Every structure is written in C-alpha cells, then in structure tokens.
Image (cartoon, rainbow, N blue to C red):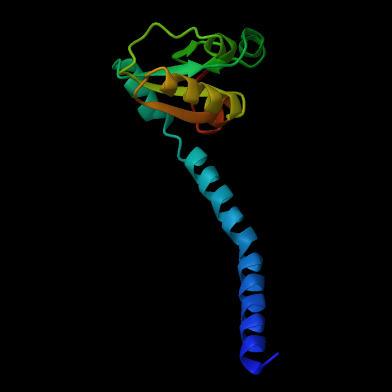
Length: 140
C-alpha cells in the first residue's frame, strides 16, 4: 500500500469518526426544537381563533380519558377511533384544526387522517399535558 492510499484511508476514518461523534448533538438539537415548539404553544391565540370561528380544537382521546383528566376549554371531542374508521367531524374542511391527545402521538395520527380527508390546515399541538402546561384553560 502506498502513502497516498494510506492517507486517504486515514482521512476517511477520521471523517467518519467525527461525523459519528456529532450525531448525538444533531438528535439533541431536534429534541430541543420539539420541546421549544411545545413550550411556545400559544393557547390564548388558539382560544381567540376558536372564539372567532376561525379554528377548531379537537380532542382525539377516549371518553374515559376526558372524564379522568378533563379537557381543554372550547375543544370538541372526536375520538381517534372514529377517524380511523372513516368518520369525519361535521365542520368545514377549510377551518384551521388544532388536534391534541394525551401525549401527542395519537394527535399525529389524527392530523394525517384529517389531511388525507381534505382538511386544509391541521396542526398537532401535542398532548393535553402540553395544553395545560402552556396555561390553557381546562374543564374538569
């Protein structure tokens, strides 16, 4: 093996090591960005949009979860299981729709279903815990 090939191999190994060592930093930044988005949840703006009829806040948790934990004031309950079997809310597909569940995962599924069904502006705001932590009004 000549010197040129050895230098290339060493360079590739060093670059691979450096890239691998920065990978966790990239993932930490992504988590940080997600947390910042949740913290920046503007519940007062969403409340105003709901009051003016420009938005709907949709809770996709089960009826049991609503009874146990309460729900966001002004929200409409529409269990995710209903969406999964093809049932859709009766409001306009042109209104902005904010969806939430307990932790955000089911709201993401609901977001996809509603978008595929033609709802033009659907936003997953995460979980009920995020709503409450951001100072959103809760009905118990």
